[in-house]
Amino acid sequence: SPTPGNHQPLTTQVAGHVGVMMTTEDGSLLIKPALPREVEFYQILQQDKTLEGLRVFTPQFLGTLKLEGQVDPSHANLAENIISIVLENLAYQFVKPNILDVKLGTVLYDDTATPEKKARMEKAAKDTTSGETGIRVTGFQVYDNATSKPIQTPKTYGKSLKPHQLGEGIAKFFPLFGQSEFLPVAGPTSGEDIDMSDSTSSYSFGLPIELLTPIVQGIREEVVLLREVYEPLEIRMIAASLLIIYEADWDRAEEALTRYFVEEDNEEDSDEEDDDDDETKPKKVGLPFVVRLIDFAHTNLVPGKGPDKGVLLGMETVINLLDDRLKKSRLEA
Ligand code: ADP
Ligand code: MN
Image (cartoon, rainbow, N blue to C red; front, top):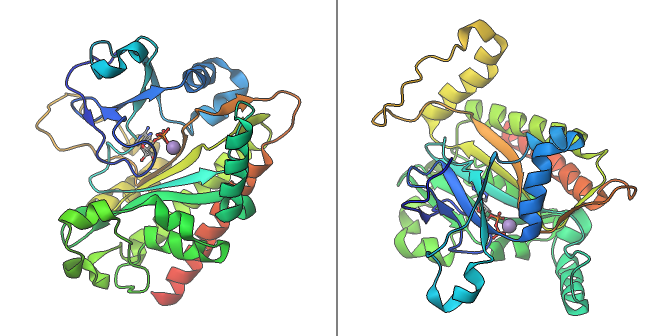
């Protein structure tokens, strides 16, 4: 079980409330202060047989934690009620994680929303891509090959997109090496310490076609599987996100892809080599990408009410966008 010790802010956060997400000292686990509903959903998810298929598409849940004595004294009255959830840090296994947070669904308020919030969220869906396509690009980070630092694209970018521009947004998250058309948009915070004048060359971003194609294809297959699992469920995920992470380090991506596509078919080769926990060792080669659902602060089971149409529409949109990305990068390779 996780030991509350030296926690540090999550540096790979691409969306959400800033400054609340912490990691354990080694970075492998996340500690998120959570609303009762999110705690409850993670707990149900571990037990409910009908949600077994969905569970593999969520971060591993290690339990809950009360961070006593670590809360700002001015909020001391809240401290007793703050429960944190301990989750697997999905970015941990990556050397250079490119991370995309996509908000799913056409409806962004739940039954607890006040009339004011309901009206605000209806307008938000209408004014962004959410209402029409079931997704909004919330935020993403893409590594710059030249500096080995991530460029973070803020949520204002995704909010500004029209439905026909979503393909452009997705292309910025999956840059093809040498393709100058889709460079990342740096936000005000990353602009402070990253000089974009050095890195706006098309050679600063992206993976070569031999690595990008299987990664986008693999991610697409995962979203197809997720949609299949999600389709029959009577659930409403309000303002949950699809978190997509892939390896942007070329050597590492190549190794991880080989493991994923070659050795997985050859079970006898993929023996659990060395299990000694030598901390000086570099990280073990993990997956080339991961696709997970996160953020269940407004998720409800709704028996008898049928499928979650808005979220399913969003998953469909993501699949179509990934198809378009594959077509486009093939054309320009
Ligand atoms: P909020 O309720 O503040 O929106 P989220 O759960 O959506 O919080 O998380 C905010 C951000 O933190 C995500 O966009 C992602 O970048 C990062 N994040 C959340 N959960 C994980 C996880 N399990 N592993 C890695 N990163 C995560
Ligand atoms: Mn969120």
